[in-house]
Length: 517
Image 1 (cartoon, rainbow, N blue to C red):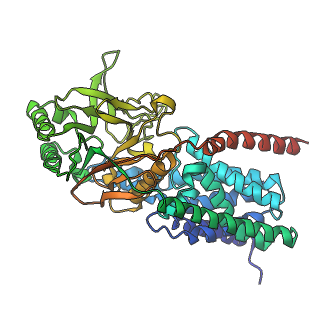
Image 2 (spheres, one colour):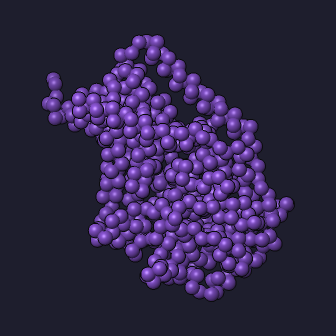
Image 3 (cartoon, rainbow, N blue to C red):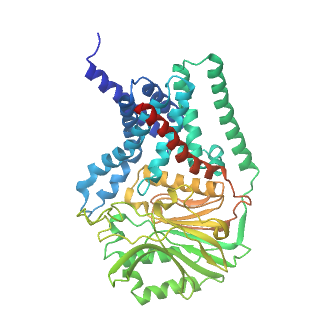
């Protein structure tokens, strides 16, 4: 018995949602990468069965909807924190953001469908390219949100993840789509057997070489440390509903100061020590009390080495128009509490830290005032007693090739301060940390991460964890600063960033001209 056409369509697109749901389990914290092979091969099969751009758009959209709702549902947890007046927005955040992201996938898979016959090698390559370009687009459009790129399935599989250093996150996404969707293509392909066999052999060979090369890199790159620089990371594990409680603010501050004292370093003693505190660890309620500044000064002075504090700060100041404004910042202080440098977060979270087009949208952001003033962009903090470093606040660390300056201002390590307490015991903090490790591999320099709670860690330039504090753990990490790798230039990944939009423009222009004709 044949089902009615409307019911067939419902089941068809439900299968696309299911394929997206399966694919999401390839990402952290499950990290079962075979799920992406199943999901993308199913997506390719479904996409190839559609008769036109409209059907291809639907398959891409519903696949992405299943993928993003499953992988990003935890974002809504930020709205459920006790005392948050925006709880009513929860359904919009859980469904709304995945819907917006799914528009990219649907749009570019509909274009790919018109580029070539889906059952030919050209059609398969068009699918892989445009699916990757949809990831590039959502990572750059508006403020960008490159979370859970398909290539990130390898984040917890370090030998495979080493490829990020050479081809970047988008290059790894392209080859991952090629690998994972291949089975779907081989089942449907109308090409000659030798073409299908050659493609299968190429995929198996490139996967094997990627693993062998990555494993070799890990085995033959010893973990080395700059023992002139000691690192102390404090994770105070403050519940989010207590983070800004006026009654608890002072107690929270005393907790983080207690974690920062008496760190022990075996011989050799470091010449310099950097204590790292999480995002907004210091607020106006703290720095307006002289006795609190005295406590910080006492901690920094208690060490025999020259000691610095790199901390997240909620800055309140007057702008040029004498208006009171706020910035989500990181500041480097010396033992005299002189400010060596201040960095203001520039990749602000839409609706969390600012409201786009606020003149026309009568909402205030989740931070409960007009929102943060954005910084000027990526910076490098320098001091003669320290290797230069790149400051990154919260999700700024997720943007490929946008975390460090280049040339003479290139840093030797990164500092990421964050607060994943908003999201509770969910996939969010694990995914955030997985992407942090990939930035270290990509740039070839270590990263020091301090979370209010989440996962605080020191990660070497190959993504290996030197030490870490788990989610909901009150802890202090004490270690030396890992050394960067000696050769860090990899221009192939920049080539992907430049060529991808250029090739997409050329292909879309050709398709548009063909449709017009």
